[in-house]
Image (cartoon, rainbow, N blue to C red; front, side):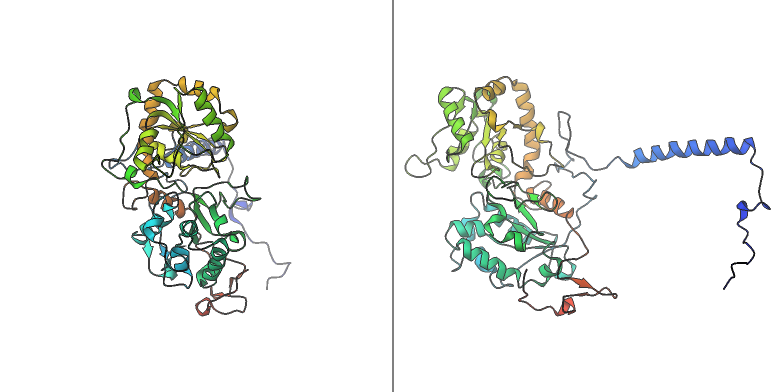
Length: 457
């Protein structure tokens, strides 16, 4: 060991023995080097900040797509390509999963659940089953998808609220990988206005999980919202397949000059203030605003075709909130080329990093529904309306639940958003790790030896 009194070491240029006089030439050279480095650094920063991907979040008058019509995701925050492995739980793999899909007696048919607002729950499951990003190996999966059609099952009497809650808990207790991550890498779909509140104990058991839902806010109904902007993903509503399929939709858009009304609202009042205001407004201005009394049964029932024929007959389609913030009418409007006017202050919209909604729609304060709104809409030139419709027709493919190999689809958009949620390190209150990298539980049992059912918090 060197003593404190040993001779000091020689540190090269800092030693007076080796010092070189600093001349004016050296000073000028050093200054030149500093200035050159500064400008070269700025140049490289600007060069590498240009993303090769096309960002649709733009403020110009047109949306640029690739040659095959695909909408390109911005590289920043997403990566240059999709690279995901998703494990989809099989309905026979876990006791209770079938009940969440088909009801207690298995009597709920999948075909019935494809219809209406909750159809996205079935479609996302089926499309992930066919996806090239699906893996059959849990140990290599980035994310885990839990199939359940509980909104449909509940509506058709397959399970009641108490049974849904109990069955979810039973299913989760049989998932070692859910326990390993505290649910952080598990995906659940709740496709209705109730959101995750369909599972009454969501805040206890899946509050760390990734929730796919069209509903971004429920604080007007519950003390807390189940949607978390950090981990959850807003998905589009399920528009009828007859209007979204390639080729000829059942109802074709009308030219602006042939549309009878300035605006319309097609929906029930449901005792909601905004909807009641629109119905009253239509009585004052029947030549400008159409609000037909929708019948859902009997001889005057509005069929699907009749509904969309009415929807296409106005320049602006008004979309007020109903039981909750989100509204399917917002998405339906794009497929009859009617500019949607969102009258729901708390609504959240999907794919906000890619779509500039101010270029394709209007959001108006729900507190100012009245003649002022109609005057404003009437002041918008047809030229501007046509431009909004044109831009909307380019991004509406993101509201179509098609396969991920399509150039543009809702599922492809969801996969891009899921890629940002992947966290490869696994951590939960019940996961521990040792010096050799092995994961164990509270009893120091290695992960490969965990056996369900496992107690949940």
